[in-house]
Length: 483
Image (cartoon, rainbow, N blue to C red; front, side):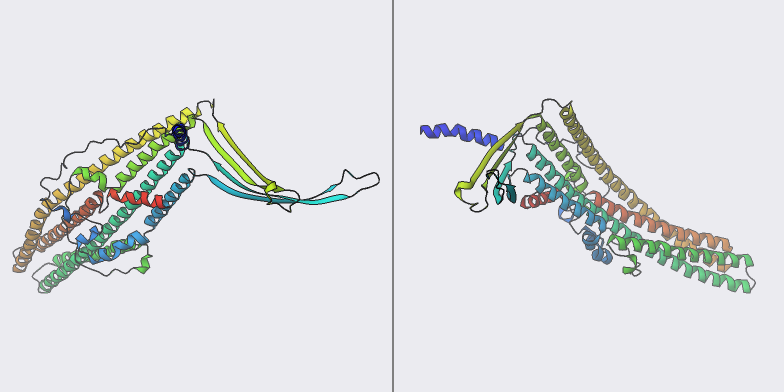
């Protein structure tokens, strides 16, 4: 019993020496003010069940076959996403490199040499040389115990950076997915505008036919024919110009899915994506749903760990070394027990004066942490701003759409009445041209309002984090632990 009592302090001391302590502050996420609800949410949409929130395949809510086909390719073929994935793999490797410093380094070394030398014991008049072979085989081990936690803080820092890289990958994927959705919406709106202008060209051709017939009958002046022809030609020019915009959107879509523009052919479609309802939730969920916020938070944790790494430089360093093997000259019988050699050693060092270097490194690490905190809080505030902008845009555009649709109905009826009155001879053609131009402008405005509502919805989904959650960062830690 006395022997066990004596051994207990020794075991405790050994555990303290081998395990060491960890200097530097333990990480705690700083508090940020979070509102209870979004300012712009009331009046924008009625409450919706939470299970309708966008999941991973959030683009399916728009009901567009092109989006359903191309969006999954972004996470595989988009070059920005592939670059972020490679950076993530590099970060995982750096975690493994940092963790390796917790373990001893083992090595094996062998040497052999053959020598020729004059025999100094030869008698007078005698001279001959000796040729011999010597060798050694030795195993080596070295270890620097992490007494003050510098290595463990370094591992902590690299793990946080790996998680930040995982969130950066998610953020890059979401950004490219929303960029693709935006490009597809722009393409669909351009196609709808092409259909609108084609319908307008057909209507202007009919009007020109009516005016030309009356001109030939002498019931209308030649200036009316010129006005109708110019109106038609302007519409035709606008229709042709839309081809440039459509080609550029198609090229952008191809690049976003990792293809050359000539590899992707997108047929014309006049149907616009469906405008989905997006449940917003409460602002506090934004801290868990936006990958860019997770990036800022994990960078903050990494900088906090870097303070511990810098502070550990104030304390002594200890390194242990051992060697065991055989040495023999001549080489024969090298592994015989009589040729066994070994050594044990320890080095301890402490910097007494460095001109303020360590103090400056700690101060720099603390300043970098404060900068990371400010960046985190700024990212959170910007996230709230983005969502509020999206909500206000959707709320205002919904009201604008109601009024604009009424304007389209009235303008369409007014253009038809003006043409009938012109044929009856009660108005001149300028009235018809003005009414038709008003109708076209109102229809294009209505299309632009629909476009803006779709784009704001895509932006809102992206600003809410898509289908991502901070729980996905656990995968980075688990993967790093397995590597």
